[in-house]
Picture 1 (cartoon, rainbow, N blue to C red):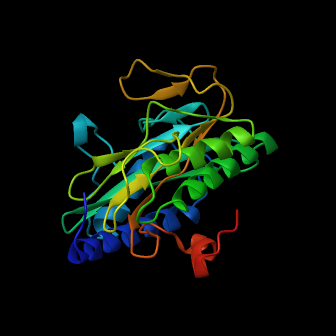
Picture 2 (cartoon, rainbow, N blue to C red):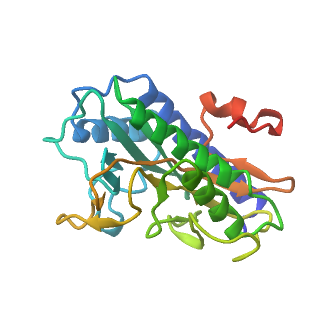
Picture 3 (cartoon, rainbow, N blue to C red):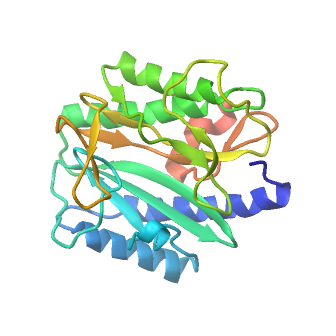
Amino acid sequence: MVKTPDELALMRASGRMLASVFEMLDGKDLVGLSTLQVNDLVERFITDDLAARPASKGQYGFEYVLNCSINHVVCHGVPDREEIIRDGDIINLDITLEKNGFIADSSKTYLVGSASPAARRLVRVAQEAMWQGIRQVRPGAYVGDIGFAIERHAKKNGYSVVREYCGHGIGREMHEEPQILNYGRPGTGMKLREGMVFTVEPMVNQGTRRVSASDDGWTIVTEDGKLSAQFEHTVAVNSTGVEVLTLRRDEMPLVKGRVWHL
């Protein structure tokens, strides 16, 4: 679970590359595109522009480079040429990338066009919940501290947190120990040590936390059909706290000088 300084340097490079994928997407108008078109756009950017490997493609038999989860889809949405992104949607794009043997994992929920105020509030709170979890990361803290902070923020705002899916250790493999639950009790679970690398990735639902699986064997949806939003970063425990390896340029003011504006 603990990475060496040389391994962390390689993971940092993978994280910077993955951040650039989202920065590329930030400049795109998604309205009218199919989710398969977005998948293909990302695949070309990762392979051609970054000379890297889309780590999700082929894993567990999955054929695509990203998950695209629209509106009531919680996670693991499958790209489809018939699924068109429409004005007012929210869509989570969950992307992985491997370079020099090390994997980075991140996701962002995009507000498409004129999304409703209720959708915008959910997306904002989901992003805040992720940062509330990340700010707990430091040597000597516990995994339970992260989950507690995430769920507390979601519940305070009237939302629920999905419990069936969680963050995970990451490195040469996509899924390593430890598991990073999005709920918990302070001071419980594994103690964090410098050099650990894992994802923090809350899935926040507008209604019930209960989810169900679709017939395709991948797509997970809210049981009540209400909206869900997710954000994810790959982070490393360092000597003073946390380093966000997949941090995007637009997020840098959030962590500059260790000041958290939430």
